[in-house]
Length: 105
Image (spheres, rainbow, N blue to C red):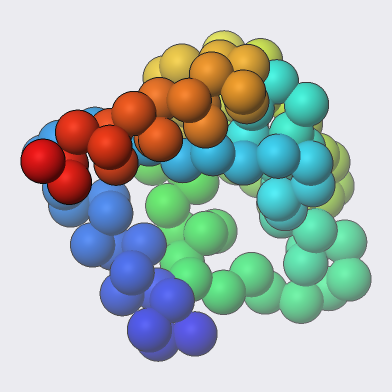
């Protein structure tokens, strides 16, 4: 968990935007499901998720998500500030492939 936590801390500290392609249950993209499923099993999530969540979405919403284990979709993630932009997954793949192609020149 320490290496996972340090990885998320590294991403959190970046001064540039980060791009993630998430499909399905990643417990984002337009058909993604986000959440802290560990809390529904009475397990504390690793990687500092419960510490970061209140800073991003506020204490009240963080408590609701942590205590209930409720999952949410990509649109709600944008509405609560957990994500800045959602696009169709096939656009993400095209973008990443083009970026990789241009980086090889």
